[in-house]
Image (tube, rainbow, N blue to C red; front, side, top):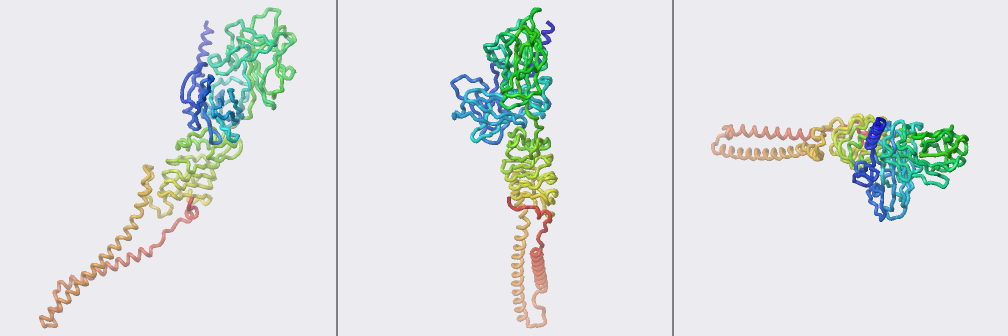
Length: 604
């Protein structure tokens, strides 16, 4: 009883791990539980690109396959799923065409995971197609991507499942390579084994019984399973056995025609209590040659034999045969067959991934680009260029007219950048200093934005850099004489650009209108004074004539002094005005910094 309770606790623990995994119904926005008690979620939180399609069919469709998401643009489209770096995972992708487009033409396209090529998907008109990979993650994100490889064949996806596995499972495999499922089969059962029977939700398909097979049912209701690969207990309730010891069990592998590395698990358990005269002993044969020592199934206990470090193809024969001393024929409960992938990539350089992530965090329009930025080649993101190699670097950002709005974040970790094109967006704030410190940068196009302030000296003095900054109204490019007091660098609005330009013209307007006004006023004043002077002289002459005395002062002495002061003041004003106008006309043109002149390009 205590042992049974312990097993229930272990089962509950494993089931809670399953609940932490994810099943994504692509193209759906609903959350629900299916017939296997698996909880499904819509894909809204994982991707916003592509078109959701609901299949129309008169036949019943398994609910997760009733919708799909199709992609008609971009080289690849990806789902990003959170994971823990270094964890062992099972990733499964489903494709059900269902003639959703009415063309009766199932498409072909590529499937990728974590920057690695997975397989070329060949969809069927009316059959569900699925693929499964088991591997150790190298980052904290799992990506599942579809990529267009043939003209007018648009990739789609119906569902994605991710399951966390125990680190001990499939322990003879290389952690730098993936296991690609070719076949997983349960012998003797009539229903699919998965979900609550298999805590890791592997799908065990019933095997087709041949004429040479007998179905055995175990007498033991509770079979002990203590294998590292944790096969479900339900597998060991039934088995296939041949009719006699001279007949072997031929294992169907579904391997490709070309030779590939193979990883295989064979599961077995004795179905009955044997008497002293009975013995069941098995051997594994590859192409008719013995490949293992004899192994004996034990009643009530699960056993396993693993085959690895072997290359094979569809012509290679695998069989279980009775050992020479066996009195009973061979049996088998379940089988897993995998091919082994090439070495998995570490992905795009982590510094570049970090820089791209900062851009995606700042600009919403970039957030829907997922998967590895550069891999697999040539399926890099549409707006970057990458170097070749197992760990590529990003060399160019082509984000012109991309609808970017806001401040430029720090992506100084992208030290291999040679080209940055950010023209015709709505970028604000000052030009970051770090752009001038990128060691390989050759072209920087910031034209057509709303950048402000001065150009950092690290950029203006960089003679290797071709810089374009036209059509940034609030950006100061005139060297030492720049004044940016009227420039708004807080990003509080778009009016600062036009306002700053109007303010900068005010001294020029005042410098031309005020002297003209003063000139008109002085000329009018001089004319008035001269007119008053002539009138005073005429009056004075008349007084002399009346008095008859030539030596008598001519006119009022106080008036004469006022006339003289007015004449002097007018003359001084005219002289000052003339001198000011002369100084303004002879003022030198502003001198630009030589380096800045050499590296500022006009036009786009």
